[in-house]
Length: 369
View (cartoon, one colour):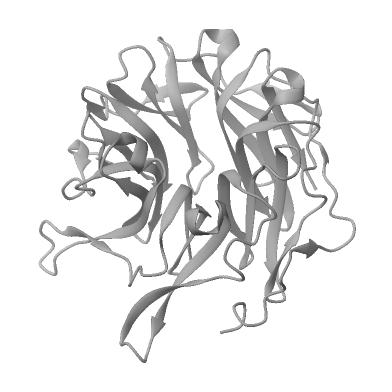
């Protein structure tokens, strides 16, 4: 298939004029930012993060194009207690939803949305347990879904909010072993989850990659989580980022079989086998070095990835897939210094990247083409 045979042996520089520049000031948050998550709606970027200056409470900011600076959406640190693992999603009307867990008790997940000029809690706590990790949110057609690992078992769970019932679990827990690096995507009402899996906590953070989806029964009763296609391509993975484009699942991950260089794969129907299977998009392990925080998004049918690039000063790097190979968008490692919590969005060809900026004492920086 094109993209496997014709992939270039090394990544190349993309089109001219795709250099990155600051969107607002570098390090624009009052203090350090953790778990930065970027989304864009109608050309307006939004950033959610754990706001260290506000006692580790959540803050959401957006870029005011007329004022040319970042401003807070509602009060900074709008939740009552310190939090961790912020996750942001915008619905089809541009309404921001934020999910996070309590930082100190580490036992409850909450979802809030911004409506009527203020932040409102969506139902009660999504989940109360002994320990929670890897919180992520996705909103489709006004319905929020949240995925996370629960308790000491690290088994994965997906919940969705229903107006009449509140938060309800989607099927059973989706992993029987310890799950890590959970990524969630919902396509036409069907939740998909990518995660790494191992026999214990250390092994699940660099574990076997799995991609599953929820399949309801024909009668509309309780369904089950099933593997997406044959997954013989997958081995050990580090981080995951899942995207479903026009009904086709894609996943980006640090490929443990390729020294944790980035790989992107998609699930296709194989007529010879009569079933779905995963194939690489371009060359497996196409980055120069190992990656952290890989993020995969699509724009106008084109896949883009961003990651912390350990081969290029631990800076931010963005690549896209065109003409059967992965090419750089701008220069590799274009950030001023080391980055963490890399987040990526692309809208109508304009690329936005957010991160905790090591050159600015881990305050948030956003750059765009």
